[in-house]
Image (tube, rainbow, N blue to C red; front, side, top):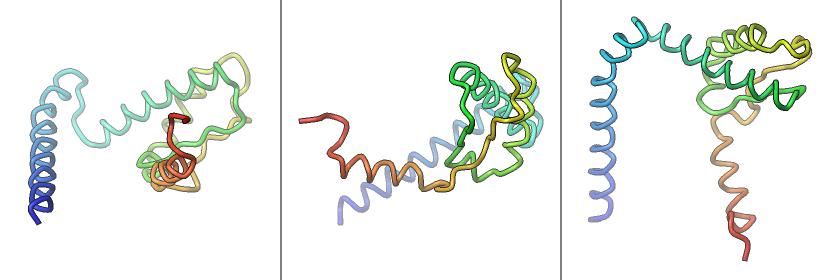
Length: 126
């Protein structure tokens, strides 16, 4: 029972710390990046994600890019700006044939990957 309460207290402290960080960084985000709303922050994050995807496309030239987790849960709010950024930044070859799609596993991808890794025996081979 003691471990249960210790876990709950740690979780609560983490949540309080996360809220404190968000409140503390809000003014900094506004000052540094002129982010005035959540939509602006999402658009900026999507643009940075698009830059990363464009770099990977330039390096690897895949036919399909899959985004998963919380990013995929945001849907077209994230995917449209990412696609536009990729179109703006990739000039080595046509990007019309490259699909950027959400993961079919959604936000379960990390958990399922961890289970598969555990079943395999972990990262370190014996």
